[in-house]
Image 1 (cartoon, helix red, strand yellow):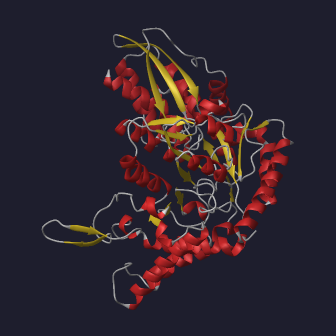
Image 2 (image 1 turned 30 degrees about the vertical axis):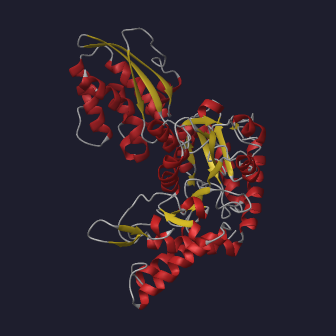
Image 3 (image 1 turned 135 degrees about the vertical axis):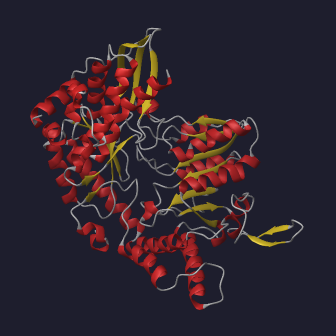
Length: 398
Length: 139
């Protein structure tokens, strides 16, 4: 649905790599062009009209984000460069100061690198212990396994809302409840979930959450860190300098501004923020629940069609999101991706930055299809037809 | 070389790669050559005796171009001196990068003479060559 909103879809391209980045609707592009063509100015700086327009749009975008995830107030929204940046900001800006040697952080084997590597580095730096919540036989997180993994040293549970290979969506609200009953903080990497299902940070009682604009129809280079006010207020800034200081004197006295400005030192990615604001309005105009319902239906159709092909292995039949991981039997994932590209079908092949997941599923590389609302049954039919002819794969790609 | 012939040589070295196995002996040095595209992952086992490559084998997961080029290259390098091997590798890399190269020494590697036209495949075709080159230059 809504394919006409995307200039890029006027080309004959079947874009099935929405987990990597989504396409950008024309309204997002236009919002960026408008910034350049009509009111280029810095934010929070000038006393002239165009600067005021930019200020308003910048803060309006923050309000849109806050409303989109139902944050209590807009000061809980910090603009970052993306999920990785957001995760690093809290792991090294908050947890480094608030965890001590021996404290345990729970993650899983199916996390994205940005929710693993910074924790490993912190483990080396201050001696915390990174531990894993066991995945069940469908590679998902069960409440029982969360309970089993918690010890009296557990201080943080840091997991993805939706994983980027298996595609399962975690019961965040339930896990959060268990976490808080045990004085554990709940960190959520929402990069894969944010554009596909409703997230309510108050209802789910999330302490910190990270996501990226470019996986939700917005520009690259812009992301969000959400934090409950009292926690965010304790995050040590990465960037000291312009925009984030309230005053400083020649003898070295420095007073910092309030959050979130304190955590946004330097001129921000203004067109990114404006583009993200436009993307959120766009998603809300369609309706996130409508998107969710449509994508699930489309995935069920894709699975039912793949099931008819006996030379295809699907690794995550059961999950109910937008992601399907599969291989053609006996063909390396990358070769399948190159073959599909001959028909302008864009898929991802690889381990999708989840490099420790192969310890769990024994398959290190898969072809991943991640659907969006602009995909349709005709595209899936084309894919299935191309797969049906894959006995010619070597002739086509060599 | 005819397209069908090239394809059958590439496929044969992929499906029946004669040097695709782990070599555990003490005489072997293991190098891992991980493609930056984060998908191909091959271990290469090299036995150098003085200045001569006595044996090489490899194991791991990778695409048809990676596996096939690795197998062909390895077969070509066994028995060569370090200098001869580096000369072959350098000319192979020149071919992939579409520069002037010495055709005489590349033998079956010539099946990849148009791989450079597919940018996404260049890394696959040069993965092992670069790994072995680095090893030889450092030893």
